[in-house]
Image (cartoon, rainbow, N blue to C red; front, top):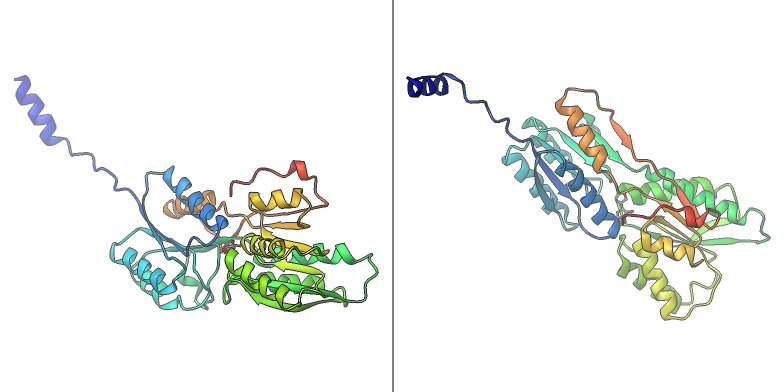
Length: 312
Ligand code: GZL
């Protein structure tokens, strides 16, 4: 009797549907800096706290590869796509494919240059223009009470046609124009890469072009490290105001040593914001079109021993 009872209940009781785990496709642009590595870790760590299945692809700074990665996610029918665009253009077709497949897309860190905002759910990232503003404001305040006829600036720029490079430059220009003595007299591209920063600075030193430069404004810490490597290699002893962006631990160390003047923070810890946005999406809660990360600036005016340890 008992056996029949067990068989009956087990057959009649519907098997509890195991809710399939949400599948997240995460396409990262590359691994060019410690900042980027932290950005990746932060997102993976936070998504790991949910029982999501995460498919991670590294685009190795190759947009074509990244587009293929996103197409793989679409073919795999993931539930949502997170991606950091290497550059700002060329994304419309694949974002349209994702939309046609009914897959929402969250853009993190760098942004895309598209007109149709329905092609993505939201952008989660820094305010690159504000970072440029803070860098320029530091430069302006540093020289405002100093007697000097001209203030010449060398700008080490990140990868071209990317939102951080464009907006950091625009933000910097916006604030230095308060001082007519200030001008960017030299610009070099180093793609956010340490070795390229070193190569560009080596060339400028060898060509004698560093002589008239008062300020180095560098779009990220990796390129600044490269520039410092070149200055050391050539034993350059020159008063140079150095302003950099990211806030890597090893750059805060240089700030504390007095080697550089200001580190504008670019917050890589997007993980919690991405996790929260995915949760809001699947719970049908509202999501703003733009989610900015909190950031600040550390400089020789800050209480250096109060700067929180960086996790990148
Ligand atoms: C900015 C990010 C930039 C960092 C660099 O959010 O895209 O790319 O500033 C990184 O370190 O290479």
